[in-house]
Image 1 (tube, helix red, strand yellow):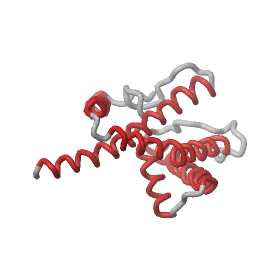
Image 2: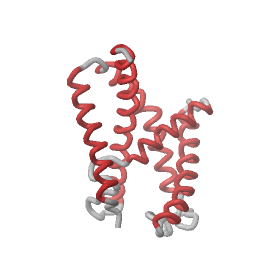
Image 3: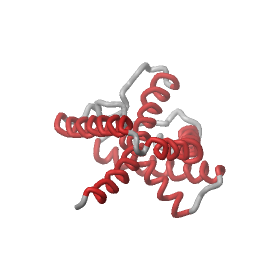
Image 4: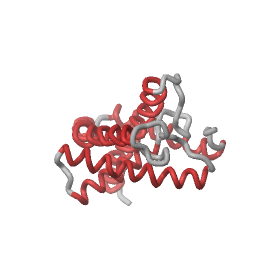
Length: 183
């Protein structure tokens, strides 16, 4: 493979890996800071299974949402909110059964929430996910694309991206090697 082709693949990898890392970080902030410290007043809890400040499920979830929206050609903000809320709620419901079957216990319980179903999903978290997806698709993602375009050839940006990506993969491999931190 020639240098030009390698550079092209690196730029594509960088673009999508930055999306993944950014949304994994935002998911970690949402879970660890908003949910634990602000909403539930429990103090700081690292809600991720990795050591670092990232929850990969949010990075993966972003790509799934992006793909669904591309297939459905959803662009209107109200539809982004409604479709995002519906998809996230269904994903959370399905994930709750999978997690309980594999881990042996649920990792969340919405029993006390208004309009909950078996403690697995509820109206309030569904609305929050709809809002967060709307925020990501309508506001953050266009800004992230502009940021990437502005700094695509910046060496400092490349170095920072490379360091963060290496840290993420070291964290992932370490956690696989050391086992889960979930109690």
